[in-house]
Amino acid sequence: MYNAFFGFKENPFNLSPDPVFLYRSPQHEEALASLTYGVKNRKGFIVLTGEVGTGKTTMLECLRDELQAEKIPFSFLFNTRLSTSQFFEMIAYDLGLNCPSDSKAQVLIALQQFLLQQASRGGTAALLVDEAHDLSWDLLEEIRMLGNLENRTGKLLQVVLSGQPELDRKLEAPNLRQLRQRIVLRCELRPFDEEQTAAYIQTRMAKAGMEEQTVFPPEVLSGIYRYTRGIPRVINILCDNLLLMAFALEQKEVNADMLREAAADMRLTPLLPA
Image (cartoon, rainbow, N blue to C red; front, side):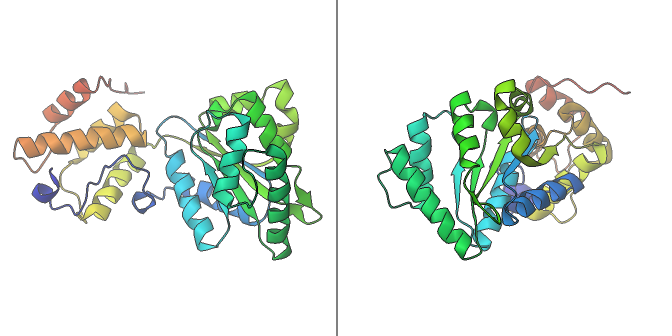
């Protein structure tokens, strides 16, 4: 609605996890490098955690792009509320396994053959699991068992578990100690600090068509950080509301009054000074 008014080619604060809009902060660069390294070098189990809205799904989308570019096949589970049979059906579908997908045994046989073929060509395959903190105990055990698929040179299937901090706490359960011992790499996404929040906003607006953003003055950027606490998803929603408000008022710059009103509408309270 406001794109033409501000000269954007597209919405800079869309909530979809588009890798094009990734702000490559040091922690995001480190996380993506670790994920990519872990899969390509057949490290087995990799865990990515972060609070709600910190960009975990965007990281997985970036990893998907990397895997597609390298022609590494993968299965991506975005819905973890699955039964065991549904879990194996999705793996069979995503990897194109030629077997009856409603038979766990047949899927496992076909999966092992597929992974051995990949390994014989120097390749591998990956299982990416989003919202992994919602996995049932049974599915976590099935995923652990997939880690037994290996040959002399490494794991045949690389597993990336991405979830909220509850995932870490879940993995500490005594019954998951075998899975916990197999985790080779751990990555964590944290909220941005104030400087990173401003850089994040500038990056997204530049990629949308405004090379040097002039909509949010420094004091408003500081206020956005205090209200959002540096959480990317909340930043996106607040900035989108502010741009819409400025458009409705036919103003090219957001002021403190607009920020307070938009934050109140979102039920946000400012972070108190230390």
